[in-house]
Image (spheres, one colour):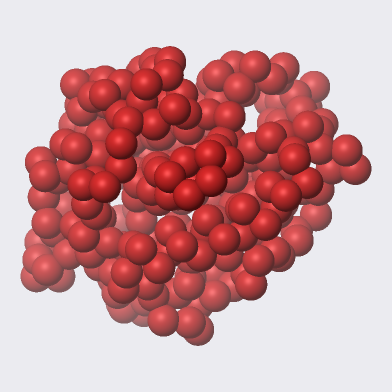
Length: 261
């Protein structure tokens, strides 16, 4: 069931009569809430899944793309805090840019009130204090920018070959990578929230040491798991990713879970 909450910043793909956990999932640059829709049959009953839906894509395509990471974080935190009033535990999963958003919201929540996620799971993302090693690509000429994005995998070449799709996608991706470039980690102390980092074995943009550095951003437990695939292993090994997320959260696999294709 699709359910829009919080002024459309999150879409809940499945409600539960008596939820025992809410999983908030934050997509990569250019992505929207639908990135996580196919997770629904892989999750056990009792887990509610909320996909983050920034402006400028999918159901919010007509709205201007965000220009401030702080505005995105503020909006996301507000909705999550409202939902958390009923006391249901929650956890965060973020892939690439989504990991920075999830981390920033966690920092904000710990600093403001101590209401925190049970676990922060970051995927395909360089640790915050290592972000200075991430290249600023948002101002590259179109062809150079497209070449860089293609190097990450995930975007079929036919998308860039289609002039209309190219015209639609380029401004969204540039805006999202501009948010990455604007990220600063100056005000966040190491978290009390446990952090688990996931990485792709063939993702040269986020090597193992950049993932392992996430352990420096928490006073609690931390772990790193490498999975087969490139930067977009979140799709190519989706079943394995969800299985690892559930394991980290101490949740059983869904009876409807399907093997990898």
